[in-house]
Amino acid sequence: MRKKIRTLLLFSFFLSFAVLVGGGLFWANLRFSRQQPAGVDFVTIWRSAQNFMFDGVTPYGDWTPLEVQEIVYGRMARADENPLRLTLPLYDLALFFPLAWVQEYHVARAVWMIVLQVAGAAALSFSLSLSRWKTPWYLLALLHLFAFFWLPSLLSVYDGSS
Image (cartoon, rainbow, N blue to C red; front, side, top):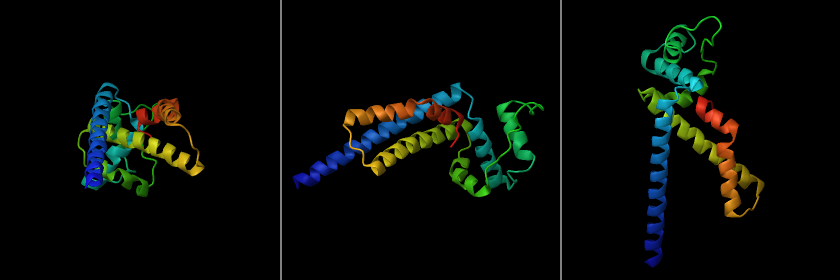
């Protein structure tokens, strides 16, 4: 009986911790997304998925890039600017269909940033488990911090690039 109570308390602690960290991460990413209007890679894919799912518009036509250019530039792109066309194959676009249900761009971008951050931590943990590298917990924490704040990781999250 004591073991069940201890397990239940431990589970509820970790669940509460995960909800608090996830909520804090979402709040921070949402504030960042509203203050830094970047994420050009993400907005192209997100808007293409929305147009394909709800309007039946091909993501490779002319309509979707015009909408994305309006979001990013506030106007049509000039000849020397990126035309912001979708370059992913359609089966990769299916990964973004759940985010297409989110109507507000900043909320969808905040959720995508969380997905990228969790995926980066999971990739590092998976790589370490594959290598069977045993290290003290504080070095593991430092390695995760380094991987999270490394410039390519930050740029990937900033731009929304997978």
